[in-house]
Image 1 (cartoon, one colour):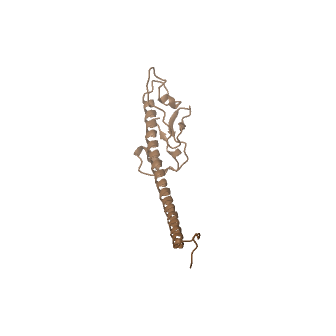
Image 2 (cartoon, helix red, strand yellow):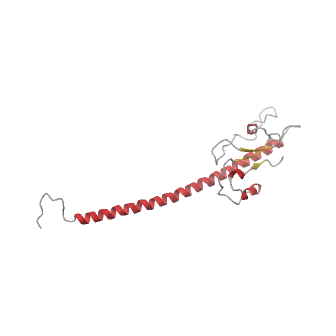
Image 3 (cartoon, helix red, strand yellow):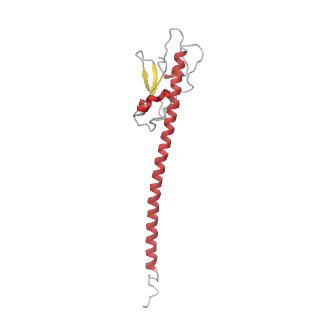
Length: 166
C-alpha cells in the first residue's frame, strides 16, 4: 500500500482513537465517583451543622430559662414575676439602676432570626421561649433531666424552655 504524503492517516491512528475513548470513559467514571463522594460528604457536613445548631439551641434555651428564673426570684414586693418583653431581661425596669439577667438577646440558631415563639400568661407576661422552626430535630434522646420532655418532640418549636418557678 502506497501512502500519499498528504494523507491524514498515519499508522497507529485507530489504536490512538481507542485509547482516547478509554481515557474519556475513565474520566467520566472518575467524575461520577467524585460526585457521589462529594454528595455523601455534603450530607455528613449538613448533619454535623444541624447537630451543632441543636446544641446551640439547647444552650440558648437554658440561658433564657435561667434568666426568666432569676427575673422571678428578684421580683420586688408586689411586682410582676415575669417580663412583658424579652428586652426586660437585658435591663430590669422594675428596679433602679442596672440589673441584667441576659447579656444579649440571642438569635434562634435554627431559623437564624431574632424572633422567638413566646409562652405567655393571661396578662401577657412571658414564661417561656421556643424556636419557631417546624423542622424535625435530629436529637431524639439523651437530653438533660430538665429537657426530658423534648424526647417526644417532632419539631423544634416543641422544645419549649419554660421558667421553672411560676
